[in-house]
Structures are given as C-alpha cells and as structure tokens.
Length: 354
Image 1 (cartoon, rainbow, N blue to C red):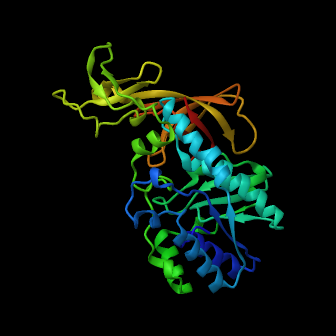
Image 2 (cartoon, rainbow, N blue to C red):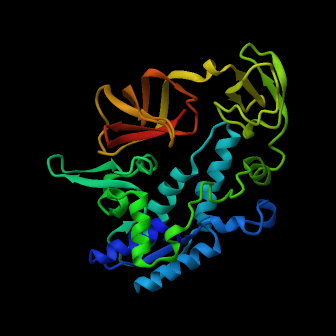
C-alpha cells in the first residue's frame, strides 16, 4: 500500500471479495539534504514520503485490516539506486521501476509476505493474470485500460510468481478506480499521481548522479558521426539516445543524441533520421511461459513504457538473449530500456536492450 488511490482500492476490493487482507507499505528511500534539491512540499508527492505511509495507514484503519511498514532501504539502495547509477555511468538509460518490481516487490517484499503467512501478494498495477487450462500456464495480459496498462513493467514475472499474484485493477479504468475510492470514502480518491521517479522527485538526474558518483560527471565533447567536435557537453551520463532538448548547443538545425561513448566521454549528435533503427538485441530475457521459443516468430514489440507496440520478427538467441527486427524503423531504440514482446494483449516476454 503506497498511500495512493490504486493500492487503496486494491485492498478494499480484495476484502470485499472475501480475502483476509494485510496492508503493507514499503519504506524504500530517505533523501539526505545533499541528495534533494526539492522544495519542502515536493517530496510529499512520492511514494516514499512519510505522508504516503500515513495515507496508507488511514486506509488500512478504515478497512479494519492490519498494516505493516517494511523497511527495504538497504535492498533498494543496492538493487535499484546503485543499479540506476551504474547504468547511467555505463552510458545506458535504465528503467528503475522495472528493477524495483523485480528485486523489491517480487523479491524482498514477497519473501516478507510469506513470513507473515500470506499466500498471495496484490498490487495496484493495471494488468491481468489468467490461467490457461489447456497449456497449464499462467498468462500475463494487458490491463483493459489501454492508457494505464502496466504490463510492460511486469515482463520479468515467472510462472511461480504469477501463481501467487493478484491484480484486481486489471479489469478497471482509472476513472472507475477513482469512483470506487470515493465510494469507499477514501480521502486519497483524488490524490494526484506522481510522474517522477520516486527517489528523484525534482527530476534533476544530473544533480542526483553527481551526488551518487562524485567526480565522475565531467564535461566532454559533442561529436558528429564522422568524429568532428561540435561543442562541449556537461557529462555523458546526463544524456540519453534520442534526446534533443537541453543539449545547450546551436548548430543551425535540430540535433539529437545518437550514441554515447562513456570510455571517451563523448556524445554523438546527428539529425533526426539518424536516431531511427529497425533492429535491436536484448539480454536478461524472461519468457513468461518459462519455455524459450525454438524458432523465430512474429509478434509486437514495445521499446519503452509509453511507446506503441510495433510489428516485428523476434529471434530467440542463446544465453537469455533475443534479437528483434521491426517492420518499420523505430525512433530512439535506447540501450538500458526494456523491449517487451506481445502476442496481441498477451505478454510473451522481454529483456534489456543492449
């Protein structure tokens, strides 16, 4: 229970359905004065704030269910913050929410829940789980609310996890969820959603990385594809493939980040057509069925959370890798982000773009 409308309604629906519900809030992150430049009210918007814990506790009291606070700050520091920092310092653009789901929600949190005797964990994600009796497999499906679907960030789930995971909001729209929250009398019914990464509430990645990796974010050269120096950048870790805004350089035409070279502290710029590509490879692949496909197949592939899934040919490779060849070129295929493979509304699997 994050203190938001989705997890609050999730708990209420499960209790209404007859489950014995335990509410649990994860304490993940405490910002030091050096690591936050946000104003006094800004941190209250994220799920790690003290107010979020209090909101969750009030909902639990209204539902008359036990409420626990699990302190996973050390886990979060190691598995999410350190990972996030290391990926940027390697010239990649990570998705920390996927790492948090994998290592924290479905790792440390699930372990703690089992210690309390829980048979299932439930979250407010907008996605669905169904059991296919013919295959004897659990299926991960998109949420019915296309605008809120969060199946993309759940592609790492295994069959064992799917068997112990409940997603009550997968059949609802966000509007319906808020209406239910009002019906239940929750004060969080109209609570705004946080759009920032929870541990960077001011969205200043550069400041955060400079605090986490002092001395490693240094100015370097912007170069063209043929190696010509175009100007100076603020540090390669401050940029991502496809970026145009915030480059701080005027070259007479719109220019975009096309490549990042951490070893030489260089960032390559080029015109917009240079950031389109029709193929990628991915590592650390998880197949939802737990079985690696034996031959190439047609599917839809999604290269970032807010991107549309596009028709492609998928080639399973050895060592938990795959490659994808799209029918049409994709804009800004970004190393460190995840590619997720779909068969219509069903998640087949996914991995981290190399």
